[in-house]
Length: 81
Image (cartoon, rainbow, N blue to C red; front, side, top):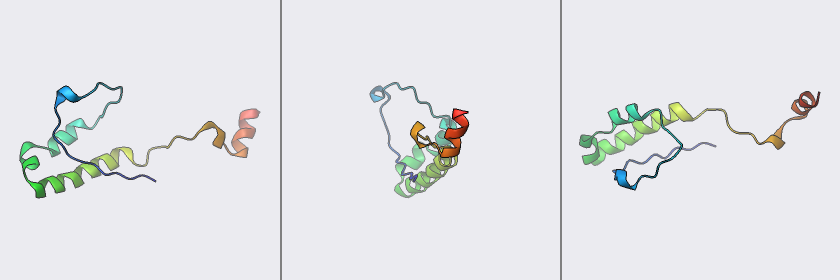
């Protein structure tokens, strides 16, 4: 089950921690989120929907992780051969 509930918020770059994860859709998000949009509640609500669409297009529907113990009998038979 995949659910996306994005939020839009101003942050201080000094409070960010470096991480190994990168978002390759930053340019699209920068185009959607401008200072003008952040100042108006209605525009911010609409922008959140657009951000949700961008994130959904990029991340939902990707192949999910399966633990090693969940292989089917056919997969175990092929692996054992």
